[in-house]
Structure formats: C-alpha cells, structure tokens
Amino acid sequence: MKKTYYDLLLALLITIAIILFSQAIPLEQYLSTYPYYLGYLKRYPWYPLWRLAVLSFLYWLFSVMIYSAESNRTFLMVFFSSLLFTISHYSLLATIGILFNASFYPIFYIYRKVMYLDWGQLSIISILIVVILKIRKNAHKK
Image 1 (cartoon, helix red, strand yellow):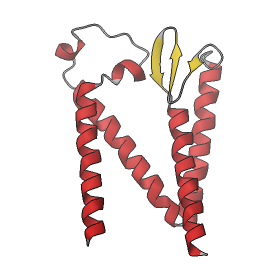
Image 2 (cartoon, rainbow, N blue to C red):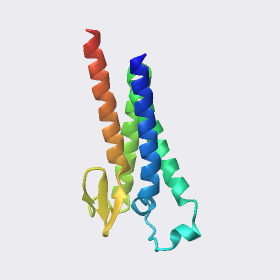
Image 3 (tube, rainbow, N blue to C red):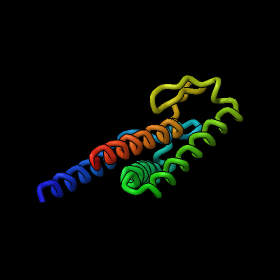
C-alpha cells in the first residue's frame, strides 16, 4: 500500500513539473524552424497549451515505453518502431542538409544559431531505458 502512495506521488509530481515547465520554457522556439518575435504569444495565445500537449505526449510516450518492457511482444514493437523513427529522422536531416552542418549536443542540436530539440536522440534514449529495464527485469527473474 505504501508503494502505491509513492507511485501516485511520483506521478503527480512529474505531472505538476510538466505543467510548470510547459508554461516557463518556450518550446516552440526550439521545435520550429520559423522565427518568433516578442509579441507572438498575444497573437497566438494557444502556444502555452500546445507546449503542454507536447510535453504531455512525451510523458505518455515514455510511460508507455517503460511499461512495454513487461511484454516481449510490445517490447519488440516499441524497439523496432523507435529504431525506424530514429533512422527516418536522421535520414530526413541528412536529406535537407542539416545533419552534417549542425552541432549536436545531448538532446539538442544547433543549426544556423537556432537550438532544436533532437527527437532522434529522445527516441534513442527512451529505447535504451526500455532495454535497461528489460535486462533488469530478466535478471530479477533468475
């Protein structure tokens, strides 16, 4: 019962952190190729909700991926879909000329002095987490 309360508390804390982060950090400046001017929030008041939706989607996606380590069938589907996404993401960056002209950092890359969230790295990190959880789960079974 105590573990359930800790799990609930952790989930609530992560959810609250996502809400606060989505309101404080202008994600659209890191995820879009279009420039932003200072008054864009007055013209596009839906951006804070869009940020919350993006972060909520990532939270949901990582939760599903971590849970998928429980089953071999879902683990393999998540693994190969993540691999496919990563390959297609970097193929796209190579095709449009960004891959070899950008500076890559953990989770981000900079192209023409603009920082972007690197979805390919997020995919790799998330699948590594799932693989580590799968290995740990199998080690505990033995």
